[in-house]
Image (cartoon, rainbow, N blue to C red; front, top):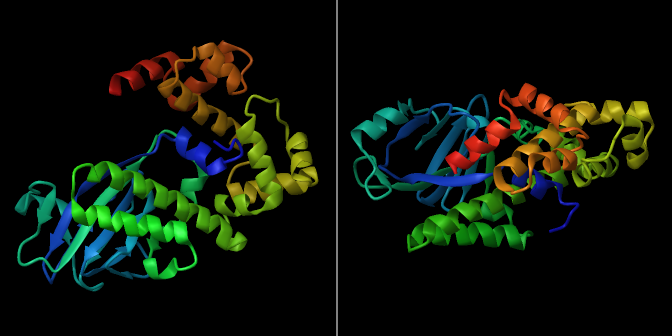
Length: 310
């Protein structure tokens, strides 16, 4: 793996996991409200027909066959045949039409079929990358003509979801993760003026400092050292970093160290003292104190609970 790959390191530390809800088969007339649900990133892939999706005050978006809508932040969303139709709550739809064999048949002859799922991650870690995502992301095949890899991933996703053969959920969930990463990467490349963490990634100076922190969290970084890495004055670096990332440099570094420590505690066989050192803490007591202050549990207890859940 490329050591300098910030996106990969973030997704790995947050322990991204994608799952499917069901395939929804809606009649010609439908409108369903999905309530707010934790910090999941929920997906809707249009297999047949078309639909509209509304998220908060965002402009409703029309989805056609092959389009993928992703809704970050666990936001309330409405999926319907037309944007003005009053919705029925999803819990009511599920009570009337319990899914069978992974398919939610919401009455009548199906005119629109959607594959619905979500990406979950370590919700105790609030990373600016996700906090700064738009309320709604729509990926359309028609807009990927110049991006062969992204177009191929979306096309393969639709093919696998439609065929419903053995291994389909495993392939589809991984493809959804691939497309999410591709979409976030595209955001960071499209418009540096967008603001937020993706803008910091697009800024060659700020990204140098981010790479340094991600590559070597164990180093005794200071704002002065990070400013030198970025090739900026201390004051300008601190101001621009905080504006785009949403956190001062050392506060971001601390958050990243703790996120990395959570991932290592949950997944690796390293002892806690080694993990503390790799994450920039010279003593185990100081690491344990900082970890418990941030997450409400000691590193040892978090490790036991993570292994128990696994």
